[in-house]
Length: 308
Image (cartoon, rainbow, N blue to C red):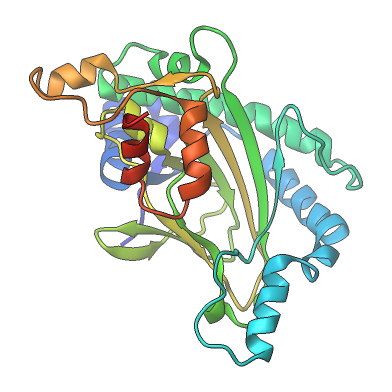
């Protein structure tokens, strides 16, 4: 079983209806799908590969041996402990946003990643317009909901992760299973080293590495806006004995002040007499709950917000 691979360029041709149906299926049945021919140049993606690899090697790799997961695994093995290291992930990670400090010692990193983020944000907005259309919402509905209106207040962040080779991958998680808190996630993953898996029909399946593809997944806020028609999906990363897996995940998330609720049109379409399946809440409140419950089932998060 493999997650859907969709040619995004066919939205603009004779196969538009077929492609829209494929995208609807990706959102409704999978919550994860891969886009090819998405409009981001291979030349830019190659530069992103290079600067991220260079940044890890020159600015990050040396410190990983002093990190919490490295020391926790080392201690477990030395003490001949059973089971897994708990509450840590075998991951080196940092965030890029418009308001934080970026790594500065890798030539070309800032310029390349700034250019990449501009292109990814455009792609995210195109994907959201497709979701609007497939859900029967007015064009721009999801974008306006995330921005809290017509402004540009949504949060667009990029998480640059590496999962280094692990000497005991059976004893630690690469990244613990979770759903994503936000809106639309766009992942440029390693095209050689696997490790990302999603939970589909009770079975963990690989998100197959595919050169120059962008993996799309829907977060919790898309589930709420769609009144459950599109689900956020559990996913995890396995620690691997061989290979240093790169993961560049960009998040188009609501503003912390944005109010999120199921689209009125979708509540009515289900049944006018049935309550909407999700509460209305301010995204910042959701993030406060998520910070405490990220690796736990998502339904209690919605229940906690309903009680506020």
